[in-house]
Length: 92
Image (cartoon, one colour):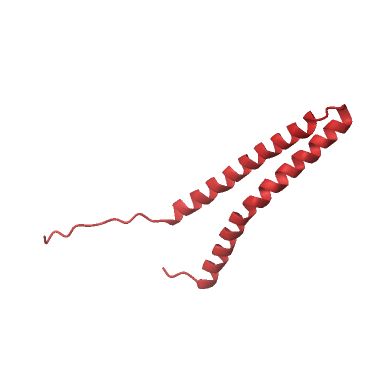
């Protein structure tokens, strides 16, 4: 079965964008954690623990998100590769 070049290019762009999103996920998660930590500090007077806890939770969320993204990409790559089966000829 032949593959349409346009479909292949679209799939490659999609895959590349998923790899590129990994850095964005890290940054956004840590910034959201920082903002929540600052809010907690101001609300409950938790300085400096609110920011530290927020950054830690943001970093943990980023690691979880990145590992899930990498696992799904690895699964896609594994399903795309077909095992090569070598057959021996009976002739000898």
